[in-house]
Length: 111
Length: 184
Image (tube, rainbow over all chains, first blue to last red; front, side):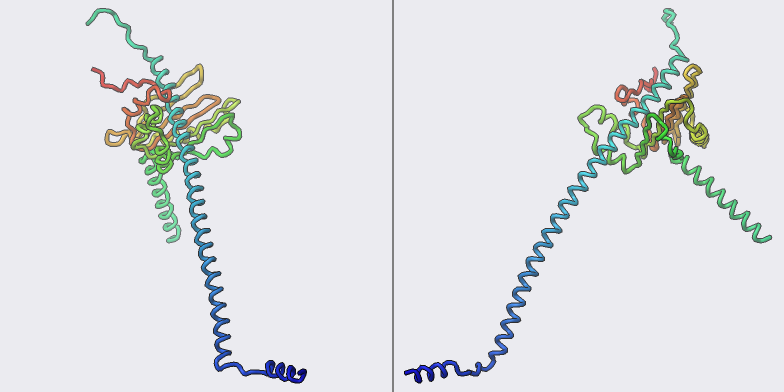
């Protein structure tokens, strides 16, 4: 009984030569799995990169618009200030000219 | 001898070029305003405005057409290529370099510039000079130099100035009625 079992075990565990092409198939599978993983990583990396680029572009545009708006409002403020100052100085000249050349008095002749 | 002649010739060319550049500056209505370096630190108040064509366009985009002041400003700057303002107020008399202000005044002696108004008040020691650059019967530049012992202002507006539109600014920016309408 024990000898039979031993015999069976021996037969079961005897070295068996792999089928022809086994090594190539294993190697091919390894390569396939590696390239599949690489493809997945590459795909995710591409998606992440594209998302980063879109995010950076949106953020950049938003920043640029904010900066442009600030510059525009500042330019508007400067323009109004420049026109105010111009008006003020023209007014000084106008007042002075008016003081120097008073309007002729109406003599009531009606001529 | 040849070198000397060559040097003299080069100097003449250089002087000629500089003179041409100065005239060109005057011709387009833009004055060469000094830097007034460090004056802002000494001044109690300072206003430095440099609006070149691109900044003027940008400013115009931010003017609200429904606001009368903004609408008047938009109309006034049509045709204007630049606005340059330097204005300083001080706590002491003549703390500013008078020579620099006079240097700007001198540029207004160039052909084309016509003095519109000259105000000299003894009591306030105030001087106001208003010049127009007139080309082909059009005002292509405006310069205002106003000085008092404790302040001075230089305004230079470059470009085609429509005096009628300036007139329309009346009441918007403290600009007085200038009596520009034809008298009948």
